[in-house]
Length: 361
Ligand SMILES: Cc1cc2nc3c(=O)[nH]c(=O)nc-3n(C[C@H](O)[C@H](O)[C@H](O)COP(=O)(O)O)c2cc1C
Image (cartoon, rainbow, N blue to C red; front, top):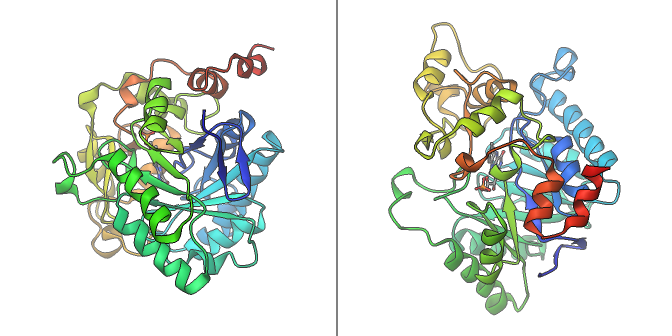
């Protein structure tokens, strides 16, 4: 099996756990994956919601405090593990979140939902923190590389290529392009890899994200040219996942036809359990309600109270309200059959039974 390093951080297994926002991947899940030899990722979006910090601080200050807590928890669970955060360009406090994560000692930053063209400027004081943008096209990777090289004399330490046809959460694609055969996940992986080799004479690890479920998918991804994989959906039905039991049960109950695309107020499509979409909108369009905190830079709910408040809808789902909560998931969510320890998934993926010792003892 290929080995993978993200910047100067060597992983035992070439796997990044996908950041899953609004406390689906907090410190507990990230720490468990990192302790098993993958890269654990705390998703920074919406961390403060429902935290005690919100009682005494505004949202953005509370977010920073909650982020420090989650990173510290992950680090306690995996003192020598590789731990990162997922930051979304679309959020209002992106810059502050990146700085907080660096100061809290993360090893890497994965950045999605927009092109992180200024990211290296935010981490200048932390050269050991690896920077990993998420893209869905070669063009996006090229734009980032050119800008980073010109302005900051650095290139990404790895690139995640996320497949809009399968991945969960917000997708970097136009809604009408999905399902039309416009995306070829592994052709994009290889083109991104070739771009860095040919244009910059360097090997930048390319990580495939979206639709990877089992060992066969993992081996296929590596065979097709990926240096590693990023898995989100597979880690939801684990004991360590930070979502409520009801959120996980919704995955266990899901059928393939329950998984669909929704349009987020952030202006991006998203993959989710889509059956309750009308209830989500009805909940948030009640008269008198309005954007409570301005968490996104651009948001249709902020400007016109339509169609729903993304952070509150995700927060409700995380807490177990599956009626009016938004349950993001990848196209494989229906494959979830039981709640298992993270170590069991890692042992299966990497055919490494020794990982199970920690579970069995
Ligand atoms: C519940 C859920 C929440 C997600 N939230 C985020 C997020 O906050 N930021 C992000 O960049 N990606 C997010 N994603 C995408 C994952 O990080 C990952 O790249 C993707 O789900 C991989 O596809 P898979 O789910 O088929 O494994 C989310 C995915 C899921 C399932």
